[in-house]
Image (cartoon, rainbow, N blue to C red; front, side):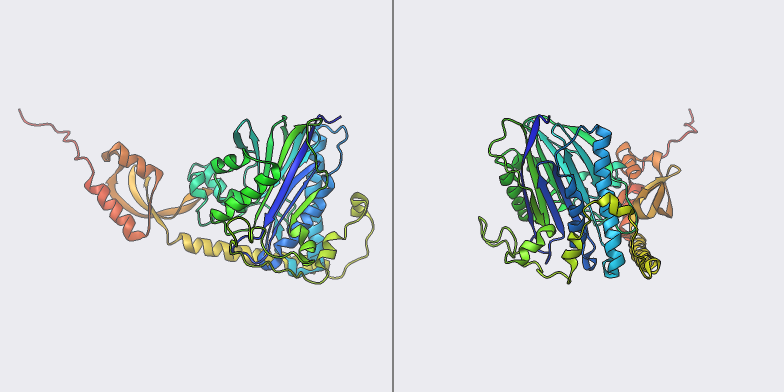
Length: 429
């Protein structure tokens, strides 16, 4: 029998800039999840709501699953979300390009089975210390892993929103999967990047150390908006209790964000914090209307997903043509993005080192998959071993420049600071 239970709260807000909420969140006795939709005109809100519809099936009392079986159930739910997006895009090609992140915590009474794709995050707050459980699948995370930038620099990097992996209708991405053992007194946080993108660990720990899960979730969203978040913000917070110690548990699941859009259409509009504490936060009203039948398509799920997955289906017309068209659109968008990124990189310069000589490089001081994003542009006669240790270290790390003139000015300063060459011929006696 399970020894622990969850007490939870969930909040999602459209924010101060966006017109619609593309986040979806879920909190239940056996599941915590956040999905952040990506796609803009391709309706990321539909992607996140669709994923939550599939993932929420994990919210059921556990059996005697092993760790592998628990993770298998999580992986299966993520793959079913992909399959459902494929079906939606087949039915409506206008949704091509939509995708969503997913951070899933499936609880079995003793531990968590974690599944993660994208840049939403899960945290564990234990004994006053916060620990990030998941690793972002983003371009800036690769730069952090390589030691090129810090976590603080990643928060303001121009490409911080470039996601390398997500649930979409094109590729069936494999989620990160792992198990986390829990203890009574632990507090869990699952959030979209609208929160973790602007709040550092210290600020989140301060908030997580106070109040009930619902209070902490509200305060995290409020603090994110006050910190200048320009995105939708979704936070799910849960406390881990001894099964007999949980006070007044609320076993009703909470669904927030785009997945709860049907309730918004029935009269509740606007951001959560309109009129909260210091008054109107200035967010724009969300767009309440979805395309005809879109929400019905989200909710139209078979009773037995495994049986329906392999059951015979009526043939569809032009299925491959639609998929090829969708693939062509995605490839075209990716090509335009890569071309724009390459064009931008060719206007970037930095001062570095090659074969013991100071060189001006054109491009970005980074690499992806072993491929350098820069190339030597001008070779100078400044030798690295004639510079001070401090200057040589800066050159080896790469000195950023605003443009070519700035890079050349840096080289001139380094040349003036060179130590005089040693006279190896000696002097006459």
